[in-house]
Image 1 (cartoon, rainbow, N blue to C red):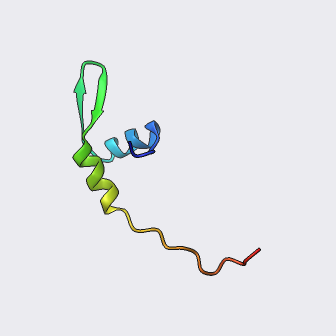
Image 2: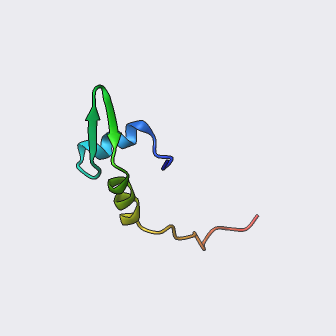
Image 3: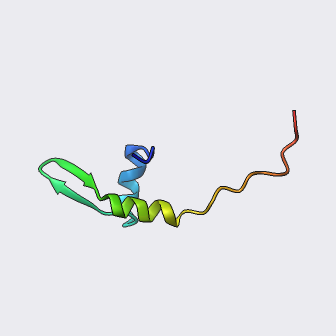
Amino acid sequence: MSGIGRTTLYGLLSQGKIKARKCGRRTLIMVDSLESYINSLPYHQPDSHRASD
């Protein structure tokens, strides 16, 4: 859904930045938690100092 890799997601879980639930062996990432995390990220700022080709 987000394009964030599994290792990164588990890192965010261990840091407490996103929440998940367990269903048997499966770890289910809560959509609202993931959306909140993504919305907290800064906007991309284009690099205006790049030399043109």
